[in-house]
Length: 346
Image 1 (tube, rainbow, N blue to C red):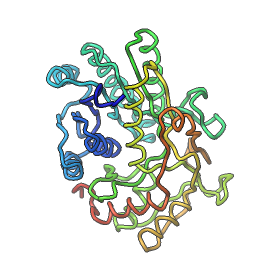
Image 2 (cartoon, helix red, strand yellow):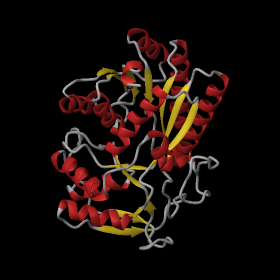
Image 3 (cartoon, one colour):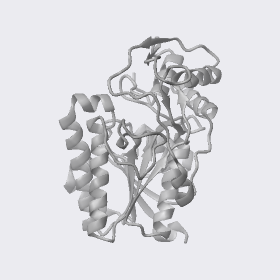
Image 4 (spheres, one colour):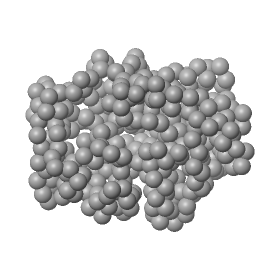
């Protein structure tokens, strides 16, 4: 079955953000109509202008906050939405520990509003942006989808709660057809260099921090912990190129079009890990300069190593991570060197 015969118009919440903008490119290039809603708290509209340049077609953009249920309902009334990809959320783990109420209110209330409006408008096909943080810190690696869910932060718990809500919804009403995609560590940028990761303030993640050091925005990289039980003592993570990740959402849409499954979760990861120092060395190769770094004590809640068992996504979604760490670093540097201040932030 051709997905576009059943899914023509996709609503992308948080579509101006890092993963959302890359997914919009892939959707538009495959012929989908795309409607983006984003409150621009952690994103800039310029990313969507760049999306239009790459794809040769612009998504519809509406500045809407999911906390505004009336405005969200108006979007569904105005556009004939066939499926939703739900990215919109606050996403910084550390900030969520400091501001749990803000995270629970934004991530849970916004998600509940979205699901309620979807049901009112008879839209039941949903691809959800989840996270490897739902596995907590006590499951053995590699992480598999059938493992018990837990989390060490309010951000992660908001993802666990949302997955439970979706399981309950799909159990109560068989019309729901949901794929929850548990991301590991998205990095990289579109090979055009037009769109990439542009975090607000000090980056929370490794790759944008390294790239900001390389471009001169930061003095050095802080590496938290060099005494883990790993090959070089630094933390090991499963890194995935953002374009591979974006394609995972298209594969999930296609699965929903051909198979009604109520609710299913999929790990999107490479299935192997790289240490912090592995990433630093690969980035130095990509940018042709050394990256100064200092070791700092471990951060509370960090674990030494985790990576995905991505075999379910390979079997059911026909999806695999294809791009190498060298490609992730080269594309990140291409983006950051062409856009030293991101989308124009100072």
